[in-house]
Image (spheres, rainbow, N blue to C red):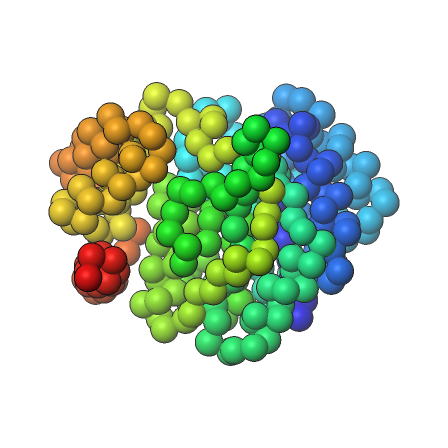
Length: 282
């Protein structure tokens, strides 16, 4: 199975070489890796060029965009820029961050999962962060969710869900649409990916309402949003974020923000979310 990787990056000189080195060491190499240098002011582009000279399957694409870090939209716009440069001859497409160290057998194992069942649409491992010298699970989501930092999609699934949406919530709506179209999402606990920069490290004040907006555009409705907001705020150890998330939801609702799902899909999303919540309670 032939897989392509697109890596959006902005000022990642600290980690970029480590990420690319871990891809070079894969037991099954990617057919193509495109690194999108999005307005970096450091040596990110130089590091990628060094790798590209040694490995013909690595290429650099430069993109100019606003320097403001808004979760979701900026990173997926950069992904699209890289994806546009690729041909259509792939079996799997991967969106990866530029601050990861993949285990050597990561993509060989991922491919094994896809080969095992034609209905598997997405596969991913788990993110680990360093704490006091130990690598521990970055516990921000449920075990059946693939982190936005490393997403691998079967081509047919990727096309059916309409690719990646340039908005916060893109890495939740992709899985919900997968399930809407009866694809399976598989996570593998044996695959431990080192996440060198904890999630949300760059989020600014303007971003804090974005999570609530994302819940709105995913079609959650208020009650599911309230439960999801509380859970996420507690997981992050910042209870007051709960209020920001709710404000973001109401703000998005009053502004009639564009939904990421159709009304039929939103109905499915709410039903699916309620089912999951009930399963945890009983």
